[in-house]
Length: 431
Ligand code: GDP
Ligand code: IMO
Ligand code: MG
Image (cartoon, rainbow, N blue to C red; front, side, top):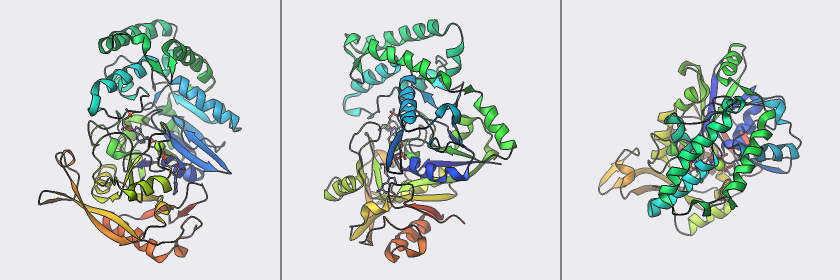
């Protein structure tokens, strides 16, 4: 068996959580392979809306195993909060969630470092979610990090204190009075206490060698779906650097983030919105700062699931999507949120980038750092509601024309179409 992958092709928030939940019945195991609580994955079903940050989106299916893989980074305080809110909804995560012992910990001081480093960047700030992502991955690569498996080893507190004092030296170099810094509006000591309480709270979730579990499961014929966080254009190598996150968000990240070899990667589902959004700073060639942009934001409820920040909105960007398809080896496309444009008489599609007199099909190294004029093709809107459709053949012809146009441009089938936030608002065209 192989591991299928589901990931975002744009700048995050494509709707990965919803589609993972929809596809979960087809799989035995759902695994997160990178990112951390910077992610916010929204699921809606049976009148409930739930946002997951660290936990895979298959968690509401009690018979399916959910894995937080070694490539993920964990803030125990946030994970504990997530577990509590799942239990309030009747879920029993101790029965269907496991965590890799190799997953790194986000310390409270990582969050302070994120905070002071962002503040010091002024206008160049990345727009980080301030969850400590960059500093925690930095410690992992610099070989200073603490991992989930370390919690069960005797000298954990000592190692925590040593790393904390290293961090304090860094923090003090940025700010005259570190004691004034808050985390989630709480003084440091208060958050630190919650963090240690979180460590105890998460202890009833099995800590395992998840790479062995995943590979054994494949041998036993189990079906596995790897769920990405963030999006391809936020990838540490190929995203709009430095306005990116600190992990490999592309399909290659699945190999190192779960411990599988490249030949074990199966289908790759590339999830994208029928338009485009971005939260935080950085290049966004098709951004609309006018009324249409506002309409996309209002209709699409485009406010961050993790931070509540308004998302920047714009037309679909085919050059960026082509690049993402190439990097990930996408086999199946998943189109989200076209219903947000139900009332639009015209829909803009960016087919190329123009810089001066030159045209570009892809976002190259230089392109994104220059003033890009998106070449926009206007397509007729369908001007009717898509939200109640569940069958492809019944969808309005003008919408199907739009879908076929995108399929042709990206040279791939759109196998799933989402027409609303709920689980049941999905048109599956998988054959
Ligand atoms: P993720 O991070 O990729 O899982 O996406 P988010 O959950 O951050 O953002 C997607 C938002 O769009 C959430 O509020 C979803 O409930 C919502 N959503 C998902 N699919 C659709 C859809 O097809 N139509 C509409 N209108 N909303 C959707
Ligand atoms: P999901 O999984 C959208 C963005 C932040 C910022 C940049 C770096 O819900 O799609 P970080 O906190 O990672 O150091 O922030 O990346 N970002 C996201 N944008 N969706 C996400 O996750 C994101 N996770 C991080 O806004 O611009
Ligand atoms: Mg999100």
